[in-house]
Length: 286
Ligand SMILES: [Zn+2]
Image (cartoon, rainbow, N blue to C red):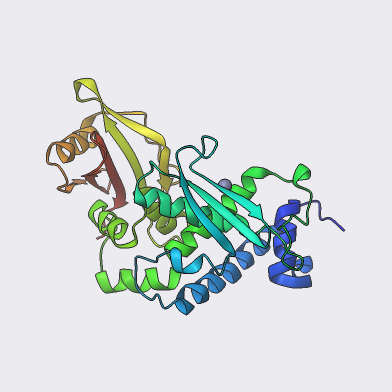
Protein backbone atom coordinates (compact mmCIF):
# COMPACT_ATOMS: atom_id res chain seq x y z
CA UNK A 1 0.00 0.00 0.00
CA UNK A 2 1.48 3.32 -1.09
CA UNK A 3 1.57 6.02 1.57
CA UNK A 4 0.20 9.30 0.30
CA UNK A 5 2.66 11.44 2.29
CA UNK A 6 5.72 9.71 0.82
CA UNK A 7 7.22 9.82 -2.61
CA UNK A 8 7.38 6.30 -4.14
CA UNK A 9 11.20 6.53 -4.35
CA UNK A 10 11.44 7.53 -0.70
CA UNK A 11 9.04 4.83 0.41
CA UNK A 12 11.08 2.22 -1.41
CA UNK A 13 14.26 3.47 0.25
CA UNK A 14 12.50 3.37 3.63
CA UNK A 15 11.31 -0.20 3.13
CA UNK A 16 14.87 -1.32 2.24
CA UNK A 17 16.64 0.49 5.09
CA UNK A 18 14.06 0.55 7.85
CA UNK A 19 11.94 -2.53 7.07
CA UNK A 20 8.33 -2.41 8.23
CA UNK A 21 9.34 -0.03 11.03
CA UNK A 22 8.85 2.91 8.70
CA UNK A 23 5.09 2.36 8.65
CA UNK A 24 4.78 3.77 12.17
CA UNK A 25 6.98 6.81 11.47
CA UNK A 26 6.16 10.28 10.19
CA UNK A 27 7.89 11.59 7.08
CA UNK A 28 10.45 13.74 8.97
CA UNK A 29 11.22 10.74 11.21
CA UNK A 30 11.70 8.57 8.14
CA UNK A 31 14.07 11.10 6.55
CA UNK A 32 16.11 11.42 9.75
CA UNK A 33 16.21 7.67 10.23
CA UNK A 34 17.23 7.06 6.61
CA UNK A 35 20.07 9.57 6.91
CA UNK A 36 21.28 7.91 10.09
CA UNK A 37 21.21 4.39 8.66
CA UNK A 38 22.75 5.31 5.31
CA UNK A 39 25.50 7.47 6.82
CA UNK A 40 26.44 4.68 9.26
CA UNK A 41 26.53 2.18 6.44
CA UNK A 42 28.67 4.49 4.30
CA UNK A 43 31.08 5.08 7.17
CA UNK A 44 31.51 1.31 7.53
CA UNK A 45 32.11 1.00 3.79
CA UNK A 46 34.77 3.72 3.89
CA UNK A 47 36.44 2.22 6.97
CA UNK A 48 36.46 -1.26 5.47
CA UNK A 49 38.36 0.16 2.47
CA UNK A 50 41.11 1.08 4.95
CA UNK A 51 40.41 4.83 4.84
CA UNK A 52 40.29 6.69 8.12
CA UNK A 53 41.56 10.16 7.24
CA UNK A 54 40.60 12.62 4.50
CA UNK A 55 40.57 12.94 1.58
CA UNK A 56 38.33 9.91 1.19
CA UNK A 57 39.07 8.35 -2.16
CA UNK A 58 36.21 6.97 -4.21
CA UNK A 59 38.17 4.57 -6.39
CA UNK A 60 38.48 1.88 -3.66
CA UNK A 61 34.69 2.01 -3.11
CA UNK A 62 33.59 1.49 -6.71
CA UNK A 63 33.48 -2.29 -6.51
CA UNK A 64 31.28 -2.16 -3.43
CA UNK A 65 28.71 -0.16 -5.40
CA UNK A 66 28.99 -2.56 -8.38
CA UNK A 67 30.56 0.08 -10.63
CA UNK A 68 32.16 -1.81 -13.46
CA UNK A 69 33.60 1.09 -15.36
CA UNK A 70 34.32 4.75 -14.77
CA UNK A 71 34.50 6.66 -18.01
CA UNK A 72 35.77 10.21 -18.41
CA UNK A 73 34.12 11.79 -21.40
CA UNK A 74 33.62 15.26 -22.86
CA UNK A 75 29.87 15.63 -22.62
CA UNK A 76 27.77 13.01 -20.88
CA UNK A 77 24.61 14.49 -22.51
CA UNK A 78 25.50 17.95 -21.26
CA UNK A 79 25.53 16.79 -17.63
CA UNK A 80 28.42 16.58 -15.21
CA UNK A 81 27.83 12.85 -14.77
CA UNK A 82 25.63 9.87 -15.53
CA UNK A 83 24.89 6.49 -14.01
CA UNK A 84 24.23 3.80 -16.59
CA UNK A 85 22.70 0.46 -15.46
CA UNK A 86 24.39 -2.48 -17.08
CA UNK A 87 24.40 -6.27 -16.64
CA UNK A 88 25.15 -6.92 -12.96
CA UNK A 89 26.00 -3.32 -12.08
CA UNK A 90 26.59 0.14 -13.46
CA UNK A 91 28.89 2.35 -15.47
CA UNK A 92 29.56 5.94 -14.48
CA UNK A 93 30.32 8.67 -16.99
CA UNK A 94 31.92 11.85 -15.71
CA UNK A 95 32.73 15.10 -17.53
CA UNK A 96 36.40 15.09 -18.40
CA UNK A 97 36.84 18.85 -18.34
CA UNK A 98 35.62 19.36 -14.74
CA UNK A 99 38.15 19.98 -11.97
CA UNK A 100 39.10 17.13 -9.68
CA UNK A 101 36.94 18.31 -6.74
CA UNK A 102 33.88 18.55 -8.95
CA UNK A 103 34.56 15.13 -10.46
CA UNK A 104 34.84 13.58 -7.01
CA UNK A 105 31.46 14.99 -6.05
CA UNK A 106 29.88 13.94 -9.34
CA UNK A 107 31.05 10.34 -8.92
CA UNK A 108 29.88 10.27 -5.28
CA UNK A 109 26.51 11.70 -6.42
CA UNK A 110 26.14 8.94 -9.03
CA UNK A 111 26.92 6.38 -6.31
CA UNK A 112 24.02 7.98 -4.41
CA UNK A 113 21.73 7.10 -7.31
CA UNK A 114 22.62 3.39 -6.98
CA UNK A 115 20.69 3.36 -3.67
CA UNK A 116 17.44 3.59 -5.64
CA UNK A 117 18.03 0.47 -7.71
CA UNK A 118 17.24 -3.14 -6.98
CA UNK A 119 18.96 -6.25 -8.30
CA UNK A 120 17.75 -9.71 -9.25
CA UNK A 121 20.47 -12.34 -9.64
CA UNK A 122 23.02 -10.08 -11.26
CA UNK A 123 20.69 -8.89 -13.99
CA UNK A 124 20.20 -5.29 -15.01
CA UNK A 125 19.55 -3.03 -11.99
CA UNK A 126 15.97 -1.77 -12.02
CA UNK A 127 13.54 0.45 -10.12
CA UNK A 128 11.03 -1.33 -7.94
CA UNK A 129 8.89 1.83 -7.68
CA UNK A 130 7.12 3.87 -10.31
CA UNK A 131 9.47 6.55 -11.63
CA UNK A 132 6.57 8.15 -13.44
CA UNK A 133 4.92 8.91 -10.09
CA UNK A 134 8.02 10.03 -8.22
CA UNK A 135 9.64 13.43 -8.01
CA UNK A 136 13.05 13.30 -9.76
CA UNK A 137 14.31 16.26 -7.69
CA UNK A 138 13.84 14.30 -4.50
CA UNK A 139 16.11 11.56 -5.81
CA UNK A 140 18.66 14.24 -6.78
CA UNK A 141 18.47 15.67 -3.26
CA UNK A 142 19.11 12.25 -1.72
CA UNK A 143 21.97 11.60 -4.17
CA UNK A 144 23.57 14.91 -3.12
CA UNK A 145 23.17 14.09 0.57
CA UNK A 146 24.63 10.63 0.09
CA UNK A 147 27.58 12.13 -1.82
CA UNK A 148 28.25 14.56 1.04
CA UNK A 149 27.99 11.73 3.61
CA UNK A 150 30.55 9.78 1.65
CA UNK A 151 33.08 12.57 1.12
CA UNK A 152 32.56 14.27 4.51
CA UNK A 153 31.59 11.51 6.97
CA UNK A 154 29.99 13.05 10.04
CA UNK A 155 31.95 11.17 12.70
CA UNK A 156 35.29 11.91 11.15
CA UNK A 157 34.37 15.53 10.37
CA UNK A 158 33.31 16.21 13.96
CA UNK A 159 36.60 14.71 15.18
CA UNK A 160 38.54 16.84 12.70
CA UNK A 161 36.79 20.03 13.79
CA UNK A 162 37.43 19.37 17.47
CA UNK A 163 41.13 18.80 16.69
CA UNK A 164 41.33 22.04 14.73
CA UNK A 165 39.35 23.91 17.33
CA UNK A 166 38.67 26.23 14.41
CA UNK A 167 36.03 28.94 14.53
CA UNK A 168 33.53 29.14 11.73
CA UNK A 169 35.44 31.37 9.34
CA UNK A 170 36.17 31.51 5.64
CA UNK A 171 39.76 30.32 6.19
CA UNK A 172 38.60 27.25 8.14
CA UNK A 173 36.32 26.54 5.21
CA UNK A 174 39.26 26.87 2.81
CA UNK A 175 41.30 24.49 4.94
CA UNK A 176 38.49 21.91 5.06
CA UNK A 177 37.93 22.21 1.33
CA UNK A 178 41.59 21.32 0.66
CA UNK A 179 41.61 18.57 3.26
CA UNK A 180 38.46 16.80 2.01
CA UNK A 181 38.94 17.77 -1.65
CA UNK A 182 35.44 19.00 -2.26
CA UNK A 183 34.17 22.47 -3.17
CA UNK A 184 33.38 25.27 -0.71
CA UNK A 185 29.69 24.78 -1.41
CA UNK A 186 29.77 21.13 -0.44
CA UNK A 187 31.70 21.71 2.82
CA UNK A 188 29.50 24.68 3.72
CA UNK A 189 26.23 22.90 3.03
CA UNK A 190 27.38 19.89 5.03
CA UNK A 191 28.43 21.92 8.08
CA UNK A 192 25.60 24.45 8.01
CA UNK A 193 22.55 22.73 6.52
CA UNK A 194 23.01 18.97 6.87
CA UNK A 195 24.70 18.72 10.25
CA UNK A 196 23.93 22.09 11.82
CA UNK A 197 27.47 22.19 13.27
CA UNK A 198 28.10 25.74 12.12
CA UNK A 199 25.47 28.36 12.86
CA UNK A 200 26.33 31.02 10.30
CA UNK A 201 25.46 32.31 6.88
CA UNK A 202 27.66 31.51 3.89
CA UNK A 203 27.50 33.14 0.48
CA UNK A 204 29.59 33.66 -2.61
CA UNK A 205 29.94 36.96 -4.39
CA UNK A 206 31.62 38.20 -7.52
CA UNK A 207 33.38 41.51 -8.08
CA UNK A 208 32.18 43.04 -11.32
CA UNK A 209 33.00 46.20 -13.25
CA UNK A 210 33.32 49.28 -11.04
CA UNK A 211 34.17 47.00 -8.09
CA UNK A 212 30.51 46.17 -7.67
CA UNK A 213 29.92 43.23 -5.36
CA UNK A 214 27.10 40.96 -6.55
CA UNK A 215 25.88 38.05 -4.50
CA UNK A 216 25.33 34.69 -6.08
CA UNK A 217 21.96 33.93 -4.54
CA UNK A 218 22.00 30.20 -5.33
CA UNK A 219 25.02 29.73 -3.11
CA UNK A 220 23.50 31.32 0.00
CA UNK A 221 23.39 28.78 2.81
CA UNK A 222 21.77 29.76 6.12
CA UNK A 223 22.20 28.24 9.57
CA UNK A 224 19.31 28.12 12.06
CA UNK A 225 19.77 31.59 13.64
CA UNK A 226 20.27 33.23 10.24
CA UNK A 227 17.07 32.16 8.50
CA UNK A 228 15.57 35.66 8.63
CA UNK A 229 18.64 37.57 7.49
CA UNK A 230 18.36 38.83 3.96
CA UNK A 231 21.47 39.27 1.83
CA UNK A 232 20.80 41.69 -1.05
CA UNK A 233 21.93 40.89 -4.62
CA UNK A 234 24.31 43.89 -4.60
CA UNK A 235 26.40 44.64 -1.52
CA UNK A 236 27.34 48.13 -0.35
CA UNK A 237 28.65 49.60 2.90
CA UNK A 238 30.58 47.54 5.42
CA UNK A 239 29.76 44.19 3.85
CA UNK A 240 30.72 45.28 0.34
CA UNK A 241 33.97 46.96 1.54
CA UNK A 242 35.10 43.86 3.46
CA UNK A 243 34.56 41.64 0.44
CA UNK A 244 36.34 44.05 -1.93
CA UNK A 245 39.30 44.23 0.47
CA UNK A 246 39.51 40.41 0.74
CA UNK A 247 39.45 40.22 -3.03
CA UNK A 248 42.33 42.72 -3.37
CA UNK A 249 44.42 40.87 -0.82
CA UNK A 250 44.20 37.58 -2.66
CA UNK A 251 43.65 34.57 -0.46
CA UNK A 252 44.16 36.53 2.77
CA UNK A 253 41.19 36.41 5.04
CA UNK A 254 39.58 39.69 5.86
CA UNK A 255 37.59 39.71 9.09
CA UNK A 256 35.29 42.59 9.90
CA UNK A 257 33.48 42.96 13.20
CA UNK A 258 30.21 44.66 12.72
CA UNK A 259 29.65 45.96 16.19
CA UNK A 260 26.23 47.42 15.87
CA UNK A 261 24.72 44.39 14.21
CA UNK A 262 26.65 41.97 16.44
CA UNK A 263 28.02 40.03 13.49
CA UNK A 264 31.43 39.06 12.24
CA UNK A 265 32.10 38.75 8.54
CA UNK A 266 35.07 36.84 7.22
CA UNK A 267 35.75 36.77 3.52
CA UNK A 268 38.35 35.03 1.45
CA UNK A 269 39.05 34.98 -2.25
CA UNK A 270 38.33 31.69 -4.00
CA UNK A 271 41.75 30.91 -5.45
CA UNK A 272 40.67 29.30 -8.72
CA UNK A 273 37.84 31.72 -9.49
CA UNK A 274 39.26 35.06 -10.60
CA UNK A 275 36.68 37.41 -9.14
CA UNK A 276 34.88 35.39 -6.51
CA UNK A 277 34.91 35.68 -2.74
CA UNK A 278 33.39 33.34 -0.23
CA UNK A 279 32.10 34.92 2.97
CA UNK A 280 30.87 33.68 6.31
CA UNK A 281 28.64 35.81 8.50
CA UNK A 282 28.52 34.62 12.09
CA UNK A 283 27.46 36.14 15.39
CA UNK A 284 30.16 37.67 17.56
CA UNK A 285 30.72 35.53 20.60
CA UNK A 286 30.82 37.42 23.88
ZN1 LIG B 1 21.72 12.97 -10.24
